[in-house]
Image (tube, rainbow, N blue to C red; front, side, top):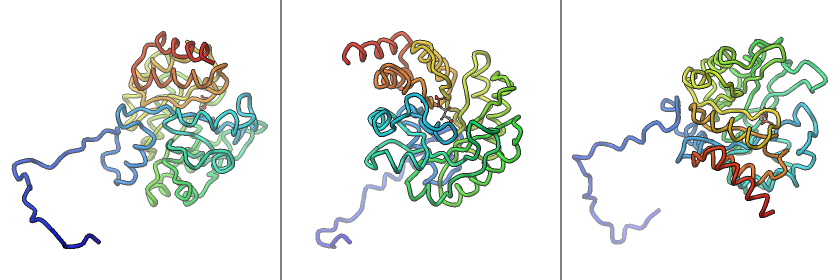
Length: 293
Ligand code: 5RP
């Protein structure tokens, strides 16, 4: 408690100045409690409202994949370039430095491996463990149109309810079944359902036609998932198109950790997302990193 010695009488009340409105930097978050907004602010960069999220949660259903053989060697060094990390609690505890300053988006659904029906998921983490790990959000796969569509919705809504109880936002991830087409109609349906049922963030794939309408039709931020490895310039062009269409950034994994210069590629993606660099300018960042390697 401060001592009373030298106390000064208060006088600067600025009675003519209205209360400061901090605005609603994050789409759809203005009615959320302070803690929820604070956690969302650790995922979405305060200056741009966008995120460069490094995804390496693939092992929760695929086991070790190319580029993820050694998370401690391949991924931990990339953490400093990411606004947020999307991973499992197992990977986090076992391989990531607790000193990381990145926001943490923890995979909280799981069940089948690649050997079985992927939509057959359940929730896979207690929300209390997310709080214990200082998570900024938890992530759940939602299989709109999938065999176990309703259960994935139940997984989402139970995590949303738990999240409200403890102040942890939920990222709903659209999982596009093999028989479904990643077009604006489907992505618009899936993202809107996820947001309507309470997710504070939505992640989905990009589509060439109508992605701006997918984003506009979703009342919370839409983050673009990277998808399979593309040539670097193509991946940067996709990321640029997505943020210019209104996406609140990207969540990319394979296009970063399977690149021949992961550090260069995440730096290039940051240029696109946070500096509005053109794909060619960003590609130059990637190439320069290779020269310097
Ligand atoms: C995999 C995921 C990944 O977070 C998402 O697909 C982004 O990774 P990538 O850019 O490699 O697709 O949900 O379970």
